[in-house]
Image (cartoon, rainbow over all chains, first blue to last red; front, top):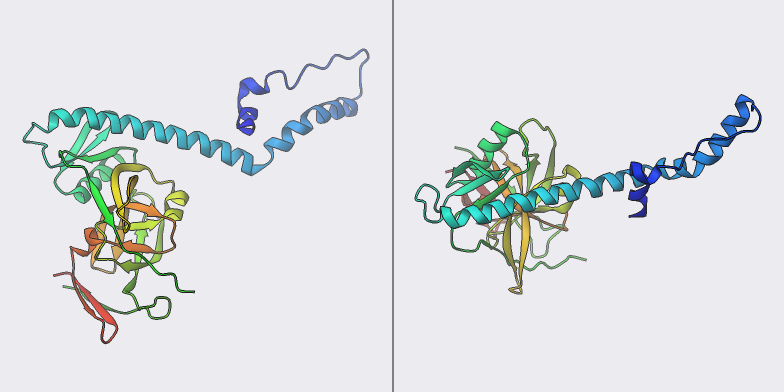
Amino acid sequence: MSDYKLLKPQETKGFIEPIHLKSLPSQDSVYDIMKKRLTSHYSILSQPSVIANSLATKSISASEQIFEREKNSFAKLKETLLHDAVYVNKFIAIMDGKIVDSDYDRSALAERVYTKHGYVQLFIGKVTKQKRYRELPSPERVKM
Amino acid sequence: MSLHTYPYDAENFDPPALILDVEVVHPDPRDKRRVTKKAKIDTGADGSVIPVKIRDEWELYKTGEVTTINFQREERVEPTYDVRIVINRLVNKIVEVTVANREDLLLGRDILNDLKMCANGKFQFFALEDP
C-alpha cells in the first residue's frame, strides 16, 4: 500500500521543493539538481505495474462498494416486495438503489437492462423467501 | 431446428467426457470481446461456471450472489457474474455464472435445459438440438 500512497497528490506535496540558490546557475546545473530530486520519484512512477496495481486496487474497491450498496438496497426492498404480487418470485434489477426492471426470466431481464443502460454495475436478485443455492457437485479426476 | 453432434473427448478425459466449444461473449452489447473455450457438459451442476481468468481480464462486475454446494456438501457464498454464452445456433443468452480457477467451462442445467441432448456413450458422440 506504500506504492499507492506515492501516487496520491498529498503524499507528493513537498517532494519537489523550491530550489534556493546563492548564485545564478547555468541551465544544465538546474537540470541536474531537478533530475537528482526527481529520480527516486520517477523510478517508482515509471514502473507500469505499480501504477496498474494502484489503479486496479482503487477501481476494485470502488466497484465492491457499489456492489455492496446495491445488494443492501435489494435486501431492504425485498422485505416489502415479498408481499407485493407484482414482484414476488421475480428477479429484479437494482441500480442506484432503485428497481429498474423485473422479470421471471433472469436472462431476459439482464438482456433488457444491458441494452437500455449499457454494462453498468447493478444487483440482480430474486424476490423469494428461499435462499438461492447452486449445486456444483461433480468431482473431477485430473488426468496426469 | 438445429442439430449438432460432437465427439466425446477421450484424449484429455478418462473416462471420456462430453466436451464442446462454446463462445463466451462480454455482456455489454457494445463490447466486442469474445473468447472460444472448451466446455464440459455437467448435468449434475445447477449453474454454469467460467474460468476466473475471463472475469479478471474483462473486469466483470458482480451482479449477484448464490450459495454454492460442492461435492463434499460444503456451502460457500459466492458472487455471480453475467456473460453471454453462445453455442453454435443453439444457445445465445446472458447467463449468470460463478467463476473457478479452471481453464474450461462447466455447462450446467441452466443452459442445458434449453436443449434436447442425446449422449451416445457406446459410440462416443453426443448430439444437441434446439427442440
